Length: 110
Length: 116
Image (cartoon, rainbow over all chains, first blue to last red; front, side, top):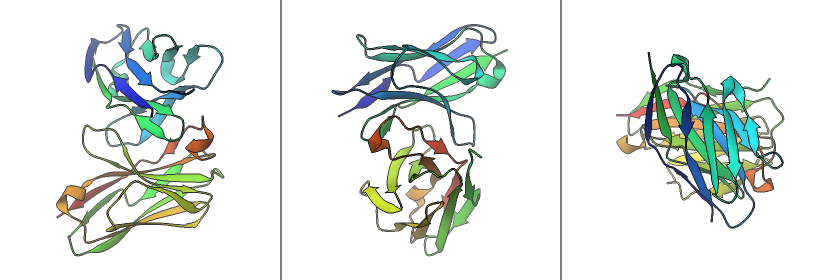
């Protein structure tokens, strides 16, 4: 069985500061990993995905994530956040089906 | 066109009503999904259609009835709902079923359902 744990339910950060949203996964087989963002009253939008190859994945809006097989992690990072990055972020793992983490609420303060 | 559309955007219905949610995609995707999302929670999978056939039903009560009339359309028929069914209902599609591995899902904006 596969599962995802997002280690922080809320992350407050000041504008232009760096941020890391943490995600750990468990799976007995090879997995595909995703980060989605959900703005208020909207659906989910794909930020980036890891399928294979380079462990550093770049996504939209300046986000990137690093796949670490030994630590079973897929943390999301951004070097400088904007107010507009305030949203809910979901890590997801996909093999037979897609499993979402509980979500991390990123709040960017001015 | 990478858009999944959902109608209506908002829906208020009584417990005795019958209503339907509609989802549409024109990306040629062969898998479509219904999710239920409660406030401050991740989406919960309800149904999966793969090549227009129902492939996964996550033990959803029979008051929710999915339908896939063709490869571009997905409906969710609602009947005799309970107040606890109030939630955001999200539709998604992917190029191939998730079982095939590695295909991201494209989400619609959702229908905000309130059951009174």
